[in-house]
Amino acid sequence: MNKTIMGVSIALVALLFIGGVYAYQNNIDKNTTNNVNKAAGQSAVESGDYNTWKTLHEGTRMASVITEDNFYLMQEMHEAMQSGDYEKAQEIRSGLGLGRGMQKNCPMRNLG
Image 1 (cartoon, rainbow, N blue to C red):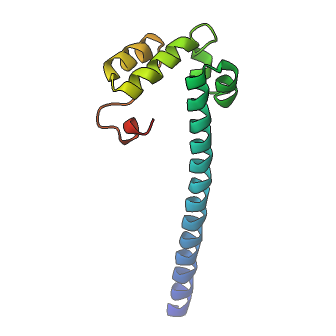
Image 2: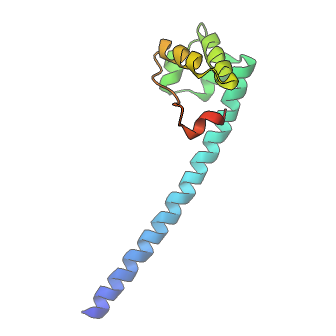
Image 3: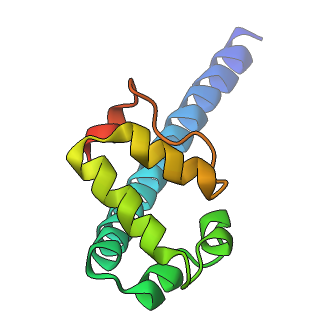
């Protein structure tokens, strides 16, 4: 009985360890992809390349809101964030119906 319980316990610990390693590796792959897309998306906004930006954001809610006609607002919002004018960026974001965006205490705020 004790050997059975010990065997099952060891098997469960091993299974949890393997699952954790897999989840960690999967997360690294997703973050790498997101960083590449973020850099390409940022470059597209900065250069005014709507078609590239749209391709990178295909299937997202943002792509359904940002059109070629209002892409200039995305550029203005990006410029406002870069210059630290978070109020203006938030006004543009809200005007587009994109929600609250990054708040003052958001760690991602200073990455762009």
